[in-house]
Amino acid sequence: MYPSVNRDLAHEIARDGVIVSEWLLHTPPRSANFPQRNRLIAGLSGGVLIVEAAMRSGSLITARLANEMGRDVLAIPGSIHASLSRGCHRMLKQGAKLVETPDDVLEEFGLVRTRPVSRHAVSAQPPVPPSAAWASARVPDIPADADVARVLTALGHALATLEILAARTEMDGAGLQGALLRLELAGRLAVLPGGRYAALERS
Image 1 (cartoon, one colour):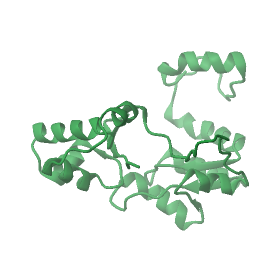
Image 2 (cartoon, rainbow, N blue to C red):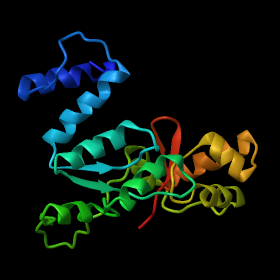
Image 3 (spheres, helix red, strand yellow):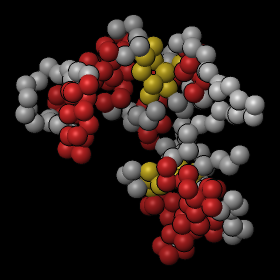
Image 4 (cartoon, rainbow, N blue to C red):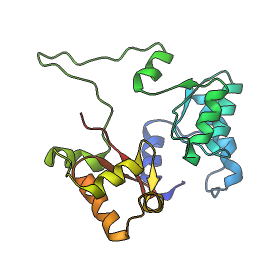
């Protein structure tokens, strides 16, 4: 099982569904085997959405395999300054469908978003990362702070690490960390796996 934290999930899938692999049980994870795994993912999917991809990445291998199998290939654009957006941009140049909202994916597959029936109006919003959900409910307004504004400007619409933000803002560590914390508490920032940060739009 790889990563090992998914062991319980794998047992749940095996109990209620099926696990498909070309490798024997207890085969250790080897990077050379990943493209073959990606081939199965592409074959079992109606389409593949590339969210982030460097120019040399498993995501692009999956997209190529999906295209060869006649599956739909979709991609989300990103900042021209982000290395993880370059693979997506290459796919878009080669004809992948541009995706900006969940509705773009539904449209590609001929599906219609179902809206709950209620006497109150309900708007469909993209899911908020869990790390920001509680904060946005507690602290509605973003602090008026020059450091916060600098961090938001530096972050833009792409994901960034602490090192990238430090280089863009030229702020010291304590000031940068403080601004990031204030943004997170205000529900304007999500802390993602891998030590990356993403700005959140407030409705």
